[in-house]
Image (cartoon, rainbow, N blue to C red):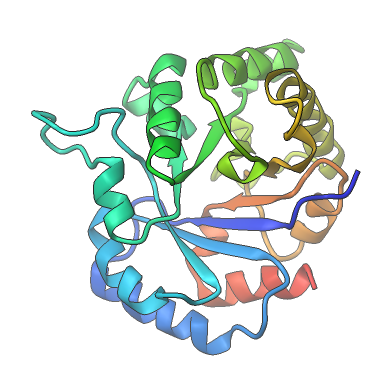
Length: 251
């Protein structure tokens, strides 16, 4: 299997003010050479307009951390896909474990958001992954694959570039604990098996990322596995040096 191009999505979560975001992006662009990977910043919605002005047509794409499942209307606080598209947003993180846990997002809501993104030309990065309790019970595969199927129910794609899947074991997010590279490979291979069922024409080239305490010193081993095509990076994405370190490690 020819691997898809490696894709690093930098998930800032609720960090950086709009002005800090602009300065950070300017610093990063000043230090990046030519990239042999895809790279995108997933920023808070208040920072997207400023970042769009800085990133423009650069090598670094712009992404949102969430998206509404609705076109428009009386949904106070929501941000629609059309609004994001107008800002130049190319990607949206959907169904992150923190959204599922703190905002009670179901698989059905995640699927609706993914479909809304695709309809508007935004690539959804659909997140799935088990908690520690499921892994300790040996149920991590069945749990994650059921979550994946539910999160893609009714979601149609026209090419492999329309969709990204991020496997994030919840127990490894922000804890300093990292699944081994083989753990990541095993689950990403299982995920690709489901993608072959759902999207047989595109499954081999759909990007499947790993997320969970990814850093410059472990990213090469993780992304070197056949079914791991990049990473959704949290804490290590907040410092320019962390990002350039990961980019350099993948050269």
